[in-house]
Image 1: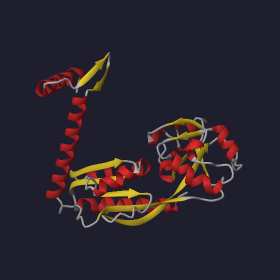
Image 2: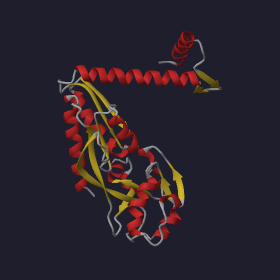
Image 3: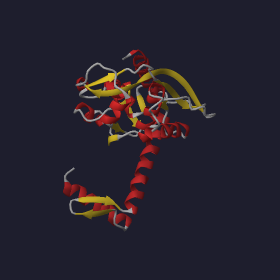
Image 4: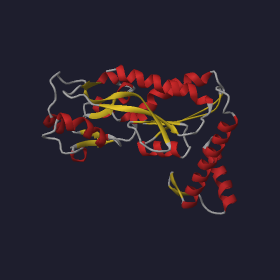
Length: 272
């Protein structure tokens, strides 16, 4: 839509609800409290529609709502394969959400997602969990370094490119490998913080800092040739668990996507 068209729709919405929905500051705008409520209402209605469609089309493997939640790095591997599957199936509605671990568990438990992928067994009484593989946690450096194993001091001098899962991954990888020097992911010297999975390794590729990511996040980086992974003396892996709501019969359109998830998990277990 053109900007005038957007503005016209906004005016109609504001006229209907009887209150401003956006605040304008120059060329920028932000939602008013009423605008936030309307946005949340719209998202809720869309989810209800998707669940309704999934319910009435549950017996058709080629039509209905595919609803999966996983980490951003796993999603970057999964989404291209889901698109290939959906291309010849116009009745499929793809729903893939990259989310934190707690949100994935909550969404599957509450029926928002048909399946989810976690990094550990949730041990929840309303969740069925199946271990489908594991993936290596990788220390990632610019591809301009010698083959010498980096020391903790050298990594601290370079600086950590952090991200939402950075501290927890650092704890898992550095504790067994640098037990004398490492005192926690929250104490690392940081050089930057990014929350976009596709951009986390960009500063590393430019020679700025280092980072720690699951193998899936490294393998899908656009400039993969500009970074290198270093296997520390004690390799560390994250398990991958496929979860679903216990007792819930999910739509058959999720069967093939579920198989794709398992194939990706198997490939990660043997890569690197």
